[in-house]
Amino acid sequence: MWTGGTMAFTVLAAGVGGYLYLKHLEGNVTTTDVGTAGSSSFKKDEAFNILIIGTDKRTGEGNEGYGDKGSTGHADTTILLHVSKDRSNATALSIPRDMIVDIPDCPTTQEDGTEKVVPGSTGVRFNTSLGQDGRDAGCTMRTVKEATGIQPHHFMMADFNAVKTLTTAVGGVKVCVEHAVDDPKSHLKLPAGESQIEGEQALAFLRTRHSFGNEGDLDRIKVQQQFLGSLMRQMSSSDTLTSPTKLIKLAEAATKALTVDSAIGTVGTLKDIALELKKVPPKNITFLTVPVVDNPAGGRGGRRPPQGHQGRPVRGPRLSGSAMKPGESVTNSQGLPTMTLTLGKDFKGAGVKLDAASAETPEVEKSTADKVQCAS
Image (cartoon, rainbow, N blue to C red; front, side):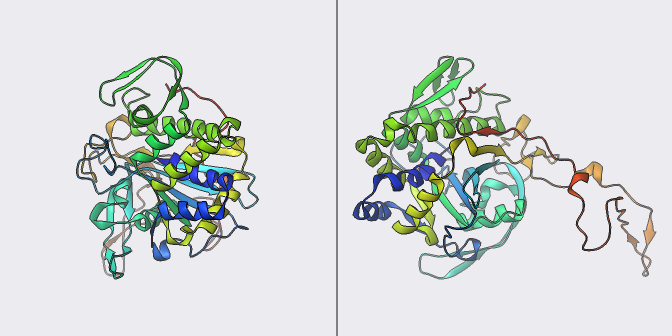
């Protein structure tokens, strides 16, 4: 939900222009050294993956009532943005905050420059990969690699203020709901159809979960993706790009709410990223969500009541129980019971890749940044 702040700057840096002003914007940005969790530099001629993180930390005026009281800032909203090498397309993959994952050991750099390794955890919610036990964004990057096999090269992180300040600076964002909304928990009130929202109302729209779908985090992710697509359309509209006042307000708002890895924290690199992202047509920016299944362990692994689909935390792509068939009961040379692994017909030998056609592709919902959708 706070991804607008991180994506906004990449669009705006190329449009505002002026080295001195961009240098000023660079001074607004906070950086974090993630070490080997990411790349040491940004390569303009290669495909790249940026992990976009929205935290639930209660920083900023008026944010005391949001997120978790006393939270150090968990990974409340996470999107892995992949941009193709030829810049013809991009994919924004949402990662459910309650997905059950294994968090690896994570080296972190302390304020005094020393290194501290935060021990890993198994079978815990994804959102604890940030903030919990002193984990930084590098830990979240390592967790994404562990869970998906995809290496994030860089990260961009923003807080609650990003949505409020960005939507106000751009003059509001159009959203659409299929039915009227009156949510006493998020304080969101909207009539059916299209509305223009900004500030507190925009944040309420992105935080509400009880007015859409099954009232779970997976349905909230869909709403966030719809909102982000609308924000991108608004920022790239002629009304915004031809208004110096709006561009400056947006640039200031985005950078003040932004934290990035040290490798991309300079004015030159941020501008390079902006120019590369600007090449991707909105119609070719696809939003989708990591496919998950209900976690049979119920409330395991979380410090709060689960917020996943049907009220249970969800777990990432793992081998299902039905796929693990017991083999013949045998013993090893020491007389101890062993497990027998029965290989399928598509196994051709050690080191030989399996035919991808033999694996069932999970159905996933997709949307693109150029399409207007109504939350339901």
